[in-house]
Amino acid sequence: MKVALTGVTGNMGLQALKELIKIPDVELKLLVFAKEKRIAKIKKICKGQMNRIQFVYGSINHPDVCDELVNGVDYVVNMASVIPPHSDQVPQYAISCNEKGADCLCTAIESLHDQPKLIHISTVALYGNRNSKHMWARVGDPLLISPFDIYSLTKMRGEFRVLESNIRYKTVLRQTAMLHNNMLSDNMSDGLMFHTCFNAPLEWVTAEDSGLLIANIIKADMENAVELKRRFWNRVFDIGGGLVNCVTGYDVLNDGFEIIGGSVKNFFEPNFNSLRNFHGVWFYDSNELDDLFHYQRQSTKDFWEQFKREHGILKMGKIVPKKLIKKLAIERLFKSPNSPRYWKKHRDTARMLAYFGGDGNYDALGKDWNKFPLLFEGKDEWGNPLDYKQLLDRDNAPLINIGFDPTREIGYRELRQIATLHGGRLLSQHGGLYDTLEWENSDGERFKMKGYTVAAGHWWNPSYRSYCWDFDRLAKKDKIYAQVWYDSHDENENNFYFFNDKFEAKYSKIK
Image 1 (cartoon, helix red, strand yellow):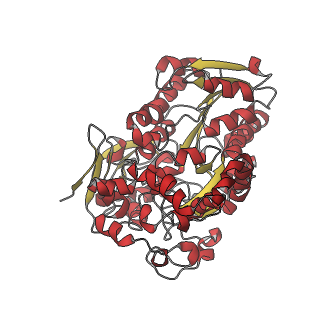
Image 2 (tube, rainbow, N blue to C red; image 1 turned 60 degrees about the horizontal axis):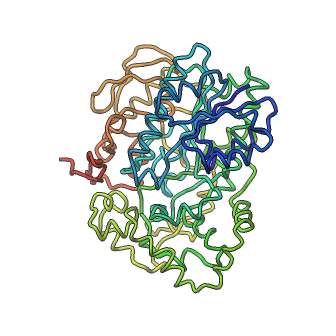
Image 3 (tube, rainbow, N blue to C red; image 1 turned 120 degrees about the horizontal axis):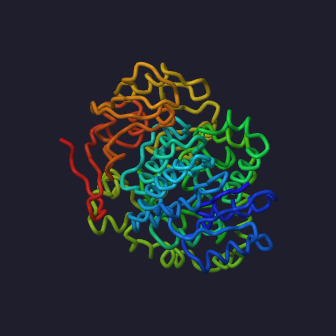
């Protein structure tokens, strides 16, 4: 059995490699962009097993490279991704890998008579911004990608290409926020961590558990392909760590600071971080994958305990004055073009609107934590009393109306209901879930899309053809979008967000 992997030197990829190499009958074909250090990591993991490893050198957006990679393999696991902050710094890289790379890979597989099965890793970022009104999401919820998040936009397009492909067996896994060993260095090199809303719902999973999931899928399909054909292939799933790993943005920052004897309130102020336009949810259906493949082992507490053991030097931070750490480690990141303080200073009106609703909301935040409502302290984002334990009650979670029940069979009637709620129509008079059907959106634009793609949350809008975000306008006539968008946006907002040819953040007022 031969498995091809992309993104193998990433945090999830290395863990998947570590687990797959334990399966005796598996040979691995690895796409690597560069040699040297990355190859050294692979050789370290696969010590004594290099005879089972074949390298393919190049980029995922090159047709010849993809053809070589997928030829003669039984499975392809696409973990290649350019993620924030790199996607924010060089948007073209995200387009090349996340969007064009997925297209190139699908084309290569489609060209084969004996097609390998494709496991495509997507992202929670597709669900966009959530707050206390709708903390929980499931497959079928709308894909409301946050303005200027080129990562989520390109991942959405990549996922769309996979679902609409002619690959006979493919599955999309939307990966949640991932805890990994490089978290500290990644977050201290850029202003990205200031994008995390303090009250944002985040369900974590460790890179180790994610890697185990990939290996368990391959093993299960090797042992019982008939069962997985019915329950797994040609579907979309959410990868999560389970209820024990459902926290808020404040919690995860706080867990990291506890290692050096501090808290968020020691090192941050309320006006450091965004109020909206993040991406994170708790997965209502993350147990589905675990029921199939039993990969959820580690909690956030387990991760941070392990992190402390492996980075013992961080304990030295306890003897350093907290004000000094705040100034030298945190506030130095205000100079990053990816930080709200930078946007404010340089009058980046477009991002201030997207992330705060405008300068006025940013200015009102202030520095006093006693005046900033936090969910775990019993207040919602607007300062109203709130039962935090009730928010964590998944069984009674408020879910948005998507027009159907994802746990039941989806037929023509359900697909028509989805279209109606979107303010559009299902034009095809008949057809099944995996048929390509004709639709009309709320703009009167006709398009073709498979029934299952729509049921998985996709719906044609300007973001699929341009690097833009038009949800202020669309939500006014789309009942599915409106249920989520107006949780953090005012109905009177009329902004059209877009990137210009230089990938500068811009906006215009909708008349």
